[in-house]
Length: 261
Image (cartoon, rainbow, N blue to C red; front, side):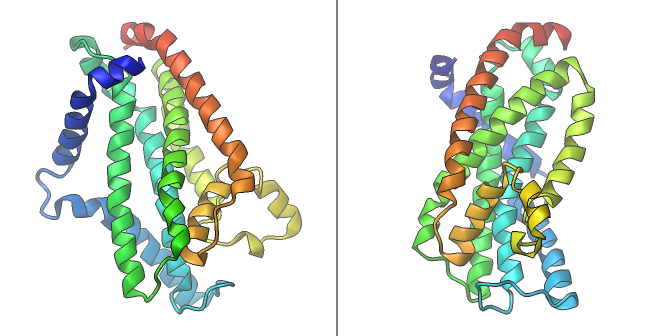
């Protein structure tokens, strides 16, 4: 499969380009919509928390501290949630393509991952501009950001491919995943800090595997501190294992998926 990916690399790149172009072909604002939606959500949360509730963020002296914190967490969460959500329905939505064209099926999730990564890079650039406008400039620790994005993409792609395969055979999976993602959003410290939780509750929240990843985004973008490497180590290992499992399951189920679809 890896050799097939390399052989079809130009097909993958052109498909990513076409996917992005088609999504915004008839839109006046074009690619700006890739960043308007998440930034609008951040603005709403920041307004409610910072202005209405007068919430303060420990460790950072900035009037717009919560807006910075929210944008950092939203960057990682958007990449994860968007990749998983698109991969879950990927094979069902691509049924006609899989039946009528002869190409390595593994190209489909790679195209999806590449598209979401490009969108996330645009969002990152927009966030940097907003940071500068608010008077906040990330420090040297921001150089860890590409690695964090790679970890996020690997974890979300592997999980999304597995769920996408299951969704082909049991369509309820596609209905359940959005609900779980919504719950995961509130169980992850994006709009709040773990420090405000009671110790007993915090212990349960620590079971969320996304917490060290999202906290690492916030560390490097807002607090200029290193990522949570102690917790990220096992997450990287788990992501690699999940990716290998997804490849094995995909290879075995690929032909049967076409028949079911």
